[in-house]
Amino acid sequence: MHTEKLKQKRITRINSKVGRDINRSIILNTVRKHQPISRAEISKMTRLNKSTVSIIVSSLLNEDLLVEAPDRGGGIGRNPLDLSLKHGKHFVGAISLDAPCTRVAVVDMDGTIKARDEIFTKAVSPDTLIPQCIGRLNALRSTLGPHRFHGIGVSVAGIVDSTHSRVIHAANLQWNDVDLGAKIREHISDNDPITVENDAKASALAEVLLGTRNTASPNLIFLLLGAGIGAGIAIHGKIIAGNTHAAGEVGHMTVVEGGEPCPCGNAGCWELYASERVPVRWYAEKKQSSPASQAALTLSDVFGAARGGDVHALHAIHLWGQHIGVGIGDMIRILDPEMVVVGGAITQIWDLVSEDINDAAWGRGTFARKRTTAILPTSLPDSPPLLGAAALSIRRIFEDFSISL
Ligand SMILES: [Zn+2]
Image (cartoon, rainbow, N blue to C red):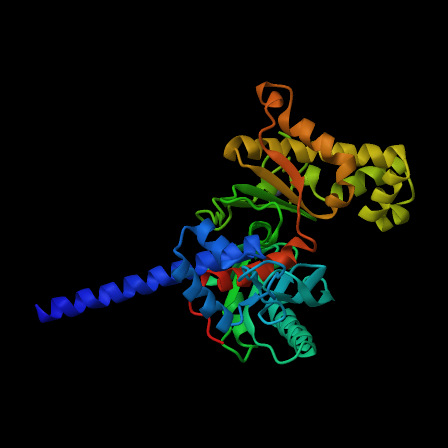
């Protein structure tokens, strides 16, 4: 009986701690989304009673996670004090691994990049690249004063087992089965949490956590267009991993039956018709220039020519938009999301391709009249995989209940 009572007491204590932790997370996230905001407004919005809000806010102020703005003043009596996230105090390390460009940054908990660097490299072994990344990250951190990281987030252009921080396959880097978490741990002295994720999934998380297109329970697909194509799928704000960690490998959907052969072993894959390499190739073929000048053409050249009214460049990017739209349409019909958010260089010419993408996505059938899913460029102000890497660690600040300073 005595033991039973003790057990019950312990369960009650655990439950009350869990309840307090959940309320803490709710309040912190409410400030993140609605700052500046007063205690009374938090109480109204969260339906938590005023004394609970007041106790938790005091604790968050003590932890330097929140800051209280000066009294708005001007009225009679006590005015509500606005609360915001405290800037310049809580940083995370972000590494976005890809070839030919790997990015590292120190990022504030609101997603502001405080310092950044880039490493240009071809496919290189993790034993070479990882020490370089950590070295650059530490150098950046030292420029900002004595800060420790709340964690290091790593996004990888490839298939990633996030649970075990392993890279299963990264085509551009030519990595297979790399225990990335362990390799990073070898080079850091702190016991910082390390989170590793696929770049498109991390980008989707950044859009949910740091973007301005946020809704209460976001159902969105983040389509990351680069040398390949990947998607991050958020259902009620949670990123779908997939049974073998490969959810969102949409670049290898077959869009042209009997089409061009793909390095994946299949043929007619979407990324052969819709990645960033494609408009460059189409434009070069039309221009019929020498092989050397064709090889030197970049995506920026094509965009510049299109803006200048070059018919071949305009044709290439409109056709590109149409091929992108076809795949987006298929994804919309599978998941019926609130929005499809697109990241990559294409956002620079969104005004020129938006109509092509939408028309191709919705087609001419019964779906054409509805257009219930918005197809939009990302709201992230910087590289989505880099902000995605940061978001992996920033999420811990807002969900992890055991921050100690
Ligand atoms: Zn393929």
